[in-house]
Each structure stands twice: as structure tokens, then as C-alpha cells.
Image 1 (spheres, rainbow, N blue to C red):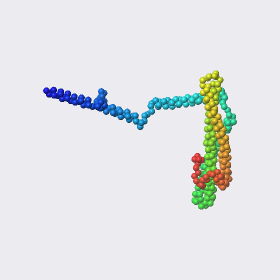
Image 2: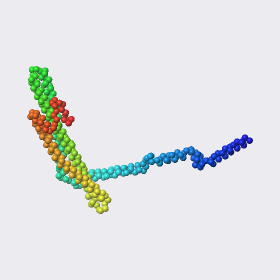
Image 3: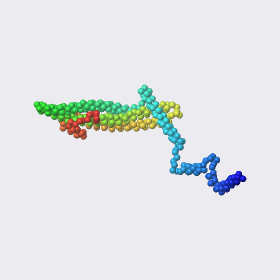
Image 4: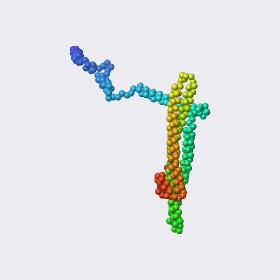
Length: 324
């Protein structure tokens, strides 16, 4: 009897649940009932939330791997192409230089310009030699001035301690101090001369020589491509690479002509500037040396004022020529 009651109560519960499910709307039952895979009921809502969030325009999507690989391939191919062109050009130029030394090929020769270039290089060597000698003179004379200054101090000290020879010591002390003052003035002129000639040799002339080196490199490239074009032109029509050789020849010919014109103009202006600078510096050197060794202090100071050179105060520590 009790079993019967229990079964009736269970069947009653089933009936009530069935009725409840029957009364529930369709979309609520689908969301509330578990799926076959055992996923929780909120899985669909979470998925919908994620899909909505990723579709939002506020989130930036990274570039695709295909785009990155394409840019890498382009960069690599560009580098390979540059390396290829450089290798070909280097090979042609090396071959041209070897054939020129062996006398197997002709080279473009501008007699007038190359004579001027040789003269400029020779002039630079001579000016550098003058600069070296002027530095040596200044260095030796600097030590002479320092010795004169020390000697004057020694005479002055002995004048205080030797009353019987005080007048003689003071006379020699004043003489050495005067020589020291004039020597410092002459050192100012010599250092100014060295600085100007150094700028002319190692900056002004060197700048023009750098342009000349570029011109000479362009000349070798031009001759290399010219020889290559002449070699291909002698072969039958339709030869592979003839059009490319013509383009390379024209490109290097224009570069060569441009650099040759630049070198000619630079050398002209350099020659004018060199004459102007050296005229001033040689006049300064002559007047300063003559005034010092003739003992004309006024003429020495006037020379430095003429060239706007600052005169050091007497007995001041004059900087070595190495510091200029």
C-alpha cells in the first residue's frame, strides 16, 4: 500500500513537471535545458557577448601574416638587387683598371684638367712641408721665450741679493723681460700663420681633392661601361644586354660630365682663394719676423693689429703651438 502511494506521488510529480514544461515558452526551454554535450546554459549568451565585442569598431585588428611576409620579401629582393648591381659595377671597374695598367684598353683623358690636378697635389705637398717647418720654428722659439723669461727672473732675484752687481743684474733682467714680451707677440703671429696654412692645406684644398677623387672614380665607371658597350656593339644585332648596357653607359656618362664640371669650377675658386690667403699670411710672416729681429717693438705690435691678432700680456703663459 505504501509502495502504491509512493508510485502515485512520483507519477504526480512527473505530471506536474510535464505540465510545467508544457506551459514554458519555447525559447526559455531551449536556454534553460542542458545541451547534449553537457555545456552550461549560459554558454550561448557568453558566446554572443564575445562575438559582439570583437565586432566592435573600437578594437583594432593586427595586420595579417601575409602582409608582413610580402613586405619582408620586397625588402629582401631590393637588397639582393642592390648587391647584384654593386657586384656588377665593381667587377667592371676592377676589370677596367687592370686593362688600363696592362695597356689593353683606352681611357678618357682630359690633359688640361689632369695637369691642374697634379699641380694641386704637388702644391698641397709643398704647403704641408712649409707648415711642418713653421711648426718646428714655433716650437723651438716657444722654448727660447720660456728660457728668456726664466733667465730674466733669475737676474732679478740676484739683483736683490747682490748689492755690488745690482745695477748690472737689473739691466739684464729688463732686457730679457723685453725680449720675452716681444717673443710672445711674435709667437702670436706665428701661431696665426700656422692656423691659416693648416686650414688651407687640410680643409680647403682637401675638400677640392675629395671632389677630385669622386671625379676619378666616376671616370673609371664611365670608361668601364663605355668599354662594355663597345664590346657588345661589335656583336650581331639582337644581343642580350645591349639595351641595358646603353642605359648604364648614358647614366655614368652624365655623372662623369657633371663631376668634371664641378671639379673645374672648384679648382678655379680654390686657386683664387689660395692666392689671397697666402698673400696675406706671407706678408704677416715677413713683417713680424723682420720687426722682431730688428728690435722694432712698435712695428711688431702694429703688424699684429693690422691682422687683428690678439697680443698676449707680458710674462703670460703662451699656449704651445700644439694647442692651436
